[in-house]
Image 1: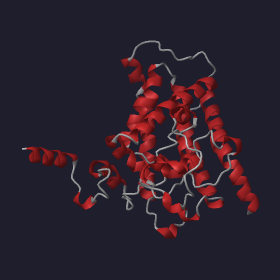
Image 2: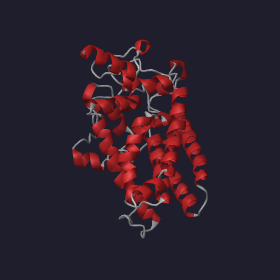
Image 3: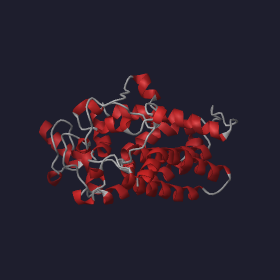
Image 4: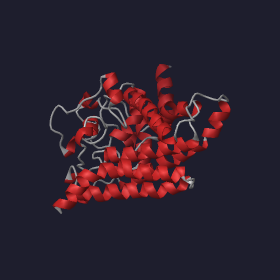
Length: 312
């Protein structure tokens, strides 16, 4: 068991980040249908699940006896997230039609170089949206759906409110399409994002060695998810810590030891567990006002009507 644990700790991140992305690269460059990437995503989720049982950061995050009750919502988030990714790819011809110019994308470069460029540029866009979402109350209400989770494991890396995911696409990836990024590079980028989100949130005590402070995963991301007020407003990057260093938001070590119960939103300890409740949550959550009562939730229209009536 000790040998298997060591194998997982040292091999998990390279297998997921390098191995699966290399497999995706081979599928795309060999001309196979993009649908073949779906089995790779299933392999990634299954690998995360197994690795979390062998070498977890926290056993409590795996323990079914703790009644996490989040699998249903997270599966729904996964399905909606990936469907939205596919829809984003289908919109590429529309974007090209709306912006009919040749663009500045270096499509003469090898596809591997284009892929790396896409990751660097998209990482900047994702980081900016992420950082701003922690500072603008309206965006935080949407992003809070991701931060409400009380534990981290592979699948809930894809927990996103659909409106916030759309914002990510508009800011981080649509500009690359306008610049002329080819569809095959966009597909590889989307796959890389999904894999990184799974690794970033996996409950696996993987070893990163010299990459520890350069990849925005592992303990770096745990520091971002702590429910210690504003102390989690750091390490906003998805792939690299590069842009956090540029913006001064990088934090290599947390201010104190992180425990299993330190994830989530401090003022919403009983975050809703169902998918529908999580979709409604941004419309009833008011930062700083304590935990919202879903049983007394107003729809956006009811809230607007109440505000108008009060003004009159």
